[in-house]
Image (tube, rainbow, N blue to C red; front, side, top):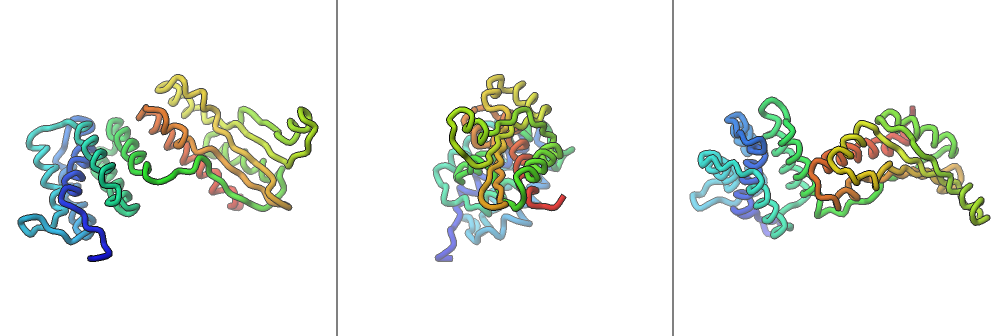
Length: 270
C-alpha cells in the first residue's frame, strides 16, 4: 500500500455525481441505469483500492450511495453534478491515472447505453467527458507515420484511404513546385492535400458557423529519405479545443478518429 495511491471517499462520491449526471443527461434516470451502475461497481470498482468508509464497507460503494441519494431527491441537475466532478478532478489530478480515466469512461458509456442505446444528450455529455479526461494528457496536433515506397504510390494510397473514410481531396498544393516557381529554390517532394468529409463538414458548420476557418483538414505527404515517405494528418481535436462548443467537439472526435485510421492504415497492404 505504501507505493499505491489511496483514493479518498470524496473521490468515489464525486464519481457517483458524475455517473448520475450521465444518467440524468436526458432528464430521466431509469432503474436499469442504476442497476447497471451497481453491476459495474461490483465488477470493476471494488478492486481499485482497499480503503473503507466509516462503516468498514468498501469505499467504492459510495458511488452507488451518492447516485441513489441524488435519484431519490430527484435532483436532475446533470450539469451541476458534472461540473462538481470536473472541479474535483482539477483539484486532485494525481488521482486520475490513465487506467482510472479509462475505467471512468467505460463506466459512463455502459450506464448511458443500458437503456435503449445512446441518445443525443448522453452522446454530448460523453464527448464532453472524453475531452475533459484527456486534458491532462498532451495531445499532438497531428497523426503521422513513415512508410517505404515511391512518392507517387504513397500519394495514391493516401487518396484511396481518405476515400474509404468518406473524404474527398478538395485542394492539392505542391510545395516543391511552388517554392521553385516563387523563390527559385530546390526543395524535397512535399504535398499538402486539403481533405473534406462532406457530412461531417456540414454538421460542423451547422453548430459553429466560423469553423470554416479550420477547413479543410490538411494531410501532408513528404520525402523523408531514399524511398521513404512520411504521411501526416491534422488532429482536429487539438484545434477544436479552443472552441467552446460541445456539439462541435462531438463531430471533431469522429473526424479525428477517421483521419487517425487513414494514418494507421498507410503501412497496411491494400
